[in-house]
Image (cartoon, rainbow over all chains, first blue to last red):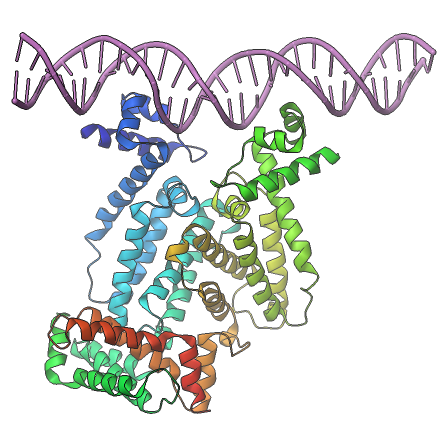
Length: 255
Length: 255
DNA sequence: CATCCATGATAGCGACGCTAACATTAATAT
DNA sequence: ATATTAATGTTAGCGTCGCTATCATGGATG
């Protein structure tokens, strides 16, 4: 199974040096000292080879980044992830274009893993009460904006000469996803609690505040969102978040 | 010179029906009743044919839109232009992918014209003192975000299932480009709706954010606060707060 | 030792982008 | 009206592509 890695590395090398962004399986075979039937026995077809190559390049870059990406501040992690994404695109334009600008490698693991990592960060932000959309929606928003900026810088550098384009888009996206606009003053009770926990080191207050907010909203709700029984039970469940036991348990996951 | 248009229309037809987004010059020749040497005498090479085809499709769509795009409100025109861009991408995914996701048709006139039209609108906004960046910078920002959303919806529909993704990104970009955040029709977007309810006294954004916060906290909760079934049902109920119907209904209760 | 299966090597198929070569027509000049 | 030129139609084919059929080889397994 060493042949597989040999082929992938040769393909990655050729892809990085390719002028038009494409490579031929014949060239890959010649560069890796392997014959075509072997390549097709291993990968099946060219799309699978490209997929494996893109995944390999992506994972190589990711393992470089992963060491420095464990922080207590999910917003800082989000910024780091964005900048890393952009840097990867500029460092590997051909692989990136295959991954985010073509349909040939749409099923590559790299794309879903990028979204998974992003969602992890966003869920931590959500747990602090700082997201105003669901992590799923936020992830789609961030990914679309980030890939749009990266592709524009790769494919239309002369039309994307603003040196702060990526940074601008990053902050624009962050602003529209976070409550209170991110860097600005928090406006919701949950965000206030999130800011307060910055001093105490715990994020459980945001959860308690969110439960309180929801219970209050629930009481004033006359729209047919819940039946009476549902509403009663939901209120009971929301009340469970207010116990100190719950708080300490939730915050146990944090530290 | 009628042969040129005949070829282009055949190519556009084939491109629209193509499964993998690519077409062969042989198929174009057969579909247009013209031989390959004639095609290559007219266009030079395949890239030029694709370029002309994309330009043709783009201009056809643009002439459809141009009639309805003379307004006194540049912000409304910006929104119209954004939605038209997205609609074109979804209606012509293969042509769009060639234009914004590949380097084969990077020099197509369509791309530069799209940016030119956009800059015209942005310059009108700038003349009204509503832009907080230069029209050039704003145009790059808008184009990158719009193409990113469109490509994501084309290439990764299962990862871009938020039906309001384009709208969300549009308002996010507008907010970050205009001075004061930019006000428009307050009924459509969640952000603007949140602004409107700020005056009315209710706080639907806080409710949505609280529900999101609780769902995130719920996901990383391993303490025995809820049983599995309880947690599943609670998550479902919390998810109901995220629908825009719910939001408007909640704020409707107090207006 | 016989069997089987994974790998090596050769050759080739059909389709691709593209072009040389020539035949034919249309347009122009004399 | 004829000769010259330019444009177009037609055939055939080159080199490369993704991919595969075919067979030889060799080492592991019973």
